[in-house]
Length: 339
Image (tube, rainbow, N blue to C red; front, side, top):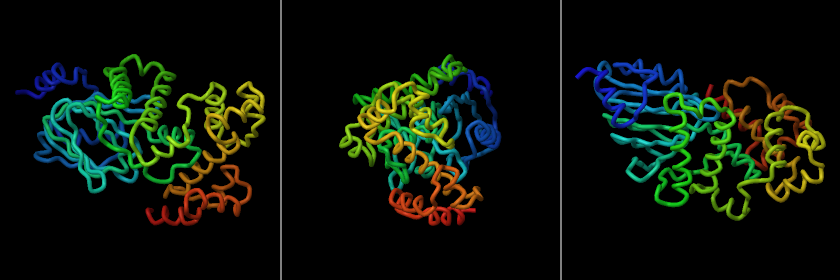
């Protein structure tokens, strides 16, 4: 049977999409997906010269959606330069298996498989295989965690990869994943609304953080953090993230939002458990840590400290160590060893 007929049959029966890309060899598949998704390592399990595939690859604000058909089996592995994301796997035919630490988990009917790609080991795609995968930018998840916990994220959250879709939390997360996937299929209407894309990405991150099982779940329960803060707190958070490197005062933030400084302080204390200034310092600490952990960044610790508004390097080092358990220089030296 010719590949085109096979792809069309699979398209009608399973994925129901019109491919934006397709080919008949493994190398072309890797090059195409790397261009739209980011570099990764992959290996075919069989003859790579007869590797039939088709894909509909769509990118939105905060996420990437991949609808795909693979007639053959292959493995994929994350590289240090691969963009970090939280992946949601929805195979229709064939299976998908991923190793996380010493544990191997496999997709199954009635369950959603999700994992941070930088915490996962090799992934095995068994062909013939049709699936949908939603890649949520990890920066969105991290931003939600910081806003809810007021604590910079310095390590893995140990997210439970298997989500039972029959549970209430599974239905909440699974239904939104399906909505995003369907909305992006074949260049769907979701892609024409940047505001809707950004809102749905952040909402999905909120649902995973609040209702998924992970290392910080008990801490969230203790804090009794509100899922939906008042409009002026949300607007202030958005303003701080958009102007994180600018010399902000809380009076400037309150004025931009359109509330009094007292109302802003009260809102943050009630719904974020901290002051507006404390929140800004937290996200700046996280931004500084990301730069210190970047092996391609050649700036000194003092320069990075100044970029993020910490005028006194010694005080910055003390706050940094108390937050992350190591000095800024320790973080930088570890990054340098990766060069």
